[in-house]
Structures are given as structure tokens and as C-alpha cells.
Length: 148
Length: 148
DNA sequence: ACTGAAATACGTTCAAG
DNA sequence: CTTGAACGTATTTCAGT
Image 1 (tube, rainbow over the protein chains, first blue to last red):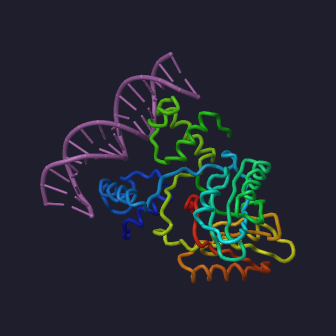
Image 2: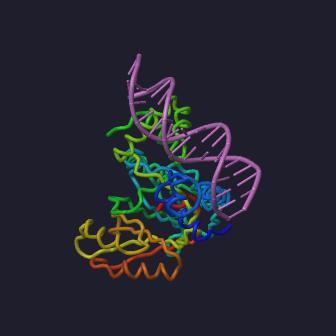
Image 3: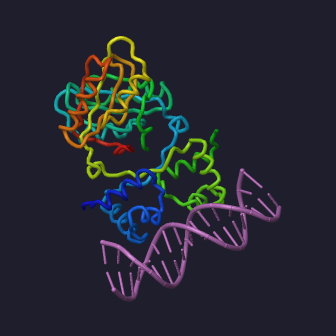
């Protein structure tokens, strides 16, 4: 359930290079490959490591039209209900409840502005959603080009 | 510079499992391991594949206090200038210029609410930044737990 | 540009400390 | 919990098509 300093160093290496070999990691942290494997396996089983993935150029991925949308809901909103509805809308990648005047924020990533508009319409039509306020991304200044 | 259908299938497999072996991928797309390696190597060299990483539980990572902050700037802001300043503030992971009333949005991920407040203060003190409007994440409804 | 084979390196398991 | 050896499998290179 918990991670020690060695685990943390292994995680750091794996975050920088998800394909690092156990032998490679072992050399860096001073462990045998099998010991590293045991730790990595345990962290995967414990859910500390949630998966391995590949960072792909978003242009090639074809979903470079991004927007952040604030949701203003009427009445009391059950987060579980919101999750159920929003997670089924295509191109809605992420959602959270937040402090402030808005009830929730969703992140949309679509292939084109028209596709973004379609997703936005679907969000607006969700029950309980009163109004929305969108910020369409003009340019990414810096940051990860997003997982998934 | 470009990717064909086979490349796209390989990317799909690698996105789902960044540690998939070339043999495994080859079986799925109908190519020999060496042919798959050639294509993956080419995509890495071309920048189509930007890296391999590991998805780590944000709780363990210790930066589960998140906020989205809208920036309202005075006068004309050069995006390059904004990038230079914001990218040097610790815990500011991502920033983009957007349409709408705000000029930019930054995503902050800190270890604790106090650490978040520190980062927020630094953003507010950035030259050209007139005012901010924050939405602190209460709960993640769904979505990737961020690639960092 | 893909295949297939050969050499090298790695992953994986397990008995033992 | 780690090691080291043994076995199976994957990666990598290269000649050939």
C-alpha cells in the first residue's frame, strides 16, 4: 500500500522512460533486475502504477482542438450523476467539481472546431446543466501534451 | 514525417500499453518484430512518438491539490513572455492562451492547499497579470490522472 | 520496405541466504 | 526482501528477397 524511497526513485525513472528495462533501473538504484521487477509488480498490483503509455504528438493524434468548459448547474448536483452523463459524451476527456461560481469544469479535446461544437452542445443539453462558459485553447504555452 | 494506417495501429497499441513488445505488436498488426521496431524507431526520430511514460497514482506522487486559474492581463501580452515567466513557477504544470474574457489559463498541481496558495501568489505577482480567477478542484469525476 | 536467422540482452522464475 | 543462476523470450542487427 505504501512506497519507500527506493520505490520513489524507480517511479521517477519509469516516469521519464516508461520502457526502461529492469536491468537499467537496477543499475541506477543499486538493485538486481529481479528485485526491481518485484517492486514494479507490487506497485502495479497496488494501483500505484496505473499503467504504461506512449506520448504521441497531438497533431498526429488529430485532437488538437481543446476547450475548457465551466458548468453551472441548477439545484443540487450529485457528482456521481454528473460523472455518469459527462463520461459518455465523446471528446469529453476529463471532468472535476470545483470551488468558485462554477459547479464543474470539463476538458474537451476534439479533432476540429466543428467537432468541438458538437461536444459542447451535448454538454449543454445534459440534464441539470443550466449554463456553460467556454474557453477555447488558442495555443499551448507549455506543459505535457496530455496523456491518453 | 507522416504516418500510415499501420503506424496508427501501432500507436494505438502503444498508447494502451507503452511496454507492449515488438513481437506482440507485430502479431496484432501482421508484421515481423523487426519491421515494427523500424517503424517505432522512425516515429521516435520524427517526433511522432514523444516518449514513453508511466501513469502514477497522483496521491503517491503527492501533488493532488489541483487548480485551474484564469489570467486577466493588462495591455497586450506576448505569449512567449507569458511562457517564459509562468514556466518557471513551481507547480505550474500547464498553460495556454484562450478565447473568452480571460487571456490565459494555467493548471497548478501542488502537494497541499498551502503549497497551492504559494504558487497562486507567484502567478498573481507575474508582471502583466492584472487579476486571476481560480477554480480549485474538489474531486476528479473522471479522466486520466495526468501525464505530467 | 519486409522477412528470417543469428547473436545478444532481457524478463521471469525459483531455490537459497 | 534480496540475490544469483537457469531458462525462456524479446530485442537487435544484418544478409537476403
